[in-house]
Image (cartoon, rainbow, N blue to C red; front, side, top):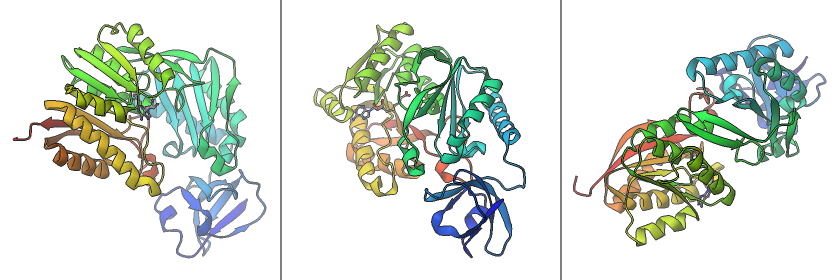
Amino acid sequence: MATVVLKANRDQRVTSGYLWVFAGEIARIEGPVEDGGVVDVRTYRGGWIGRGFINRNSALTVRLVTFGHEAIDEAFFRRRLQDALAYRQRVVGTQSAVRGVYGEADGLPALIVDRYGPRVVVQTLALAMDLRKRMLVELLTDLLHPDAIYERNDAPVRRLEGLPLQSGWLQGDADPVVEIEEERARFLVDVARGQKTGFFLDQRENRLAAAALCEGATVLDAFCYTGAFAVHAALAGAASVMGIESSDEAAAMARRHATLNGVEDRYTVTVANAFDELRRLQSVHARFDVIILDPPPFARGKETVDRALAGYKEINLRALKLLRPGGVLITCSCSHHVGEALLLDVVAAAAVDAQRTVRLIESRGQSRDHPVHLAMPETRYLTCLILEARGRST
Ligand code: SAH
């Protein structure tokens, strides 16, 4: 087994449970190993750290998979997959759509497995996982019995690993559009053309929390994608729901979802840039009881945080101005770099400008099938704040 020896004093993070070793932390590599293969990782003085996958073409050079001495063979992958699926069974229960594997948080670095009813979608976002794709497909077939498995390896992060962007059926050949149920709601998920792997499973529990506040309310769902928040709000008894979405295709699917769920009489979707549409709604003095803001990640890296904060501030300010006194703002950031503290700062600043008193009802994160690994802050990326916006005098 080849060994990656870390530089002196560069092992504190991994000995505290962090799973990534960057190129600059490595003193030398002893013994031959192919990229994508397994290496032992040791401290400069030879102390044992663990075992992981190497890719010298990536700045993220080693992804640790175990701090033990176990063999990284098929039985290892089977055990980790079984663990991951058992965890979902325990904390999510029976849902027809669930994230079965969430990468590092499940001890399976860079592997994503989403189950949508009978179909499974896989992402292998690092070289080692990509090389083991056939074995993973066989194991997943055995454990989940899907009718087909689709690969959504068109995620740009693959480029950092020297991997091509590609998608298609890995096993079977089924309709890419599959119907799922999420509590009372029914949705169609297009695993081939939808965003991410087709659906935002990470917001499942936040959608239900939001819907619980929507009875009798006029609701605005900005950045609505295929309308999952909106459908839940309508099913929970919202008086009316308006969606805003920039993608024609997503908006068309949102309208199908309105019909599929029998709420088309109370649900409309506008194709527009949400920034412009929020401004227009303000100019015509529109008012809402509940506003949901679930924008795409404005900050993809640390460098873009300032610009992102300006974007979050603008939409939150506009939303606060559109809310009736006592209205509810559900505002999200799906960027790891704009977490709870920063998003609260943004809303606080927007509240000052909008002259509203805002109270935090609840701060939430990603749904339970996307667990946060405490030693890997990168695994926490979704913040969902539920706030009440009071009048200016309270
Ligand atoms: N809330 C959704 C997920 C939203 S993802 C759910 O639960 O399923 C963010 C959405 O915002 C995407 O569908 C994207 O197409 C859309 N979007 C991105 N920029 C936008 C803009 N400027 N105006 C309106 N929609 C936008």
